[in-house]
Image: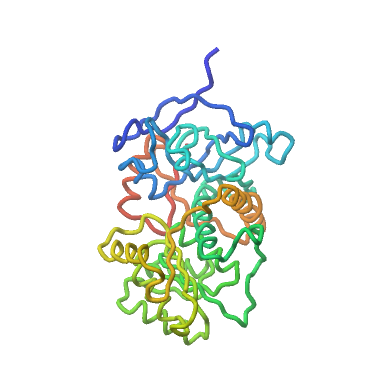
Length: 368
């Protein structure tokens, strides 16, 4: 009898077009779940991996991390638990952590995912919508952990709000129409922050619907001045920022100008990967990497917790508890809106080329 197989979008070698080929279907390890993928969403890191071999240890490789589908099998440690065959789930796969090992990439019909990165999804959320969430939500929480807003000392549990209204804590979300930016807006609003965000004007109303208090045009030459004036007039305090995508220097400058005094503790900023490679961004990111808190702002690149146990427990909290409950209660809206690309797995290369040119306000999703 032949071994079970499924179709995957395989990268044969660095920089080469993907090929839709049959791959052997592997059984889950004790703490893994085998998911039949219905939809996979695309992220900038995917075309970087395809084009430059970033994260790839060997070839052929399968990339992609955002996915939604149904459970096909569970590992031996998960028998008798809540993970039932046929259950609808979303997941953040480990394609990058596993260096492109084919069985862990989302861009295929069947994928293995560690249980701590899997979340049940309610019936009112479609597979297309669910696939847009995992990496963005994970990335936002990694950034919040890096800024000390959540920590292992709290067992990764957070109340509905960190703050009381009189304290008026504000947070700046730069690039709020991106996938990470949209998740940052929703999560920050849920945690009790007053959210000030930047985006193109065409997205302002949508970003406000998701929880932003004020939204500013990042192309406005006076954007920093406008944000500083608004926060000051509102009587808010802003000591945290999240750069999803955009100008590192402007995000830092905004936080710097809003420090109460030069003696105040440094403000904190998280910045997600794959920022635009402008000369300004390269210079300022290098500067903040070499020196301690220039301009009174401590900026940290978003990465998972370095301790493996802490990283797994944070993932378990996000997907096993927080996101699942927020979706069930409709306290988090699946966003950005998905746009299904043509061609299924055969259309991934074309879709990644489109994403590379720039996409905002929507999530490109592949029907597998």
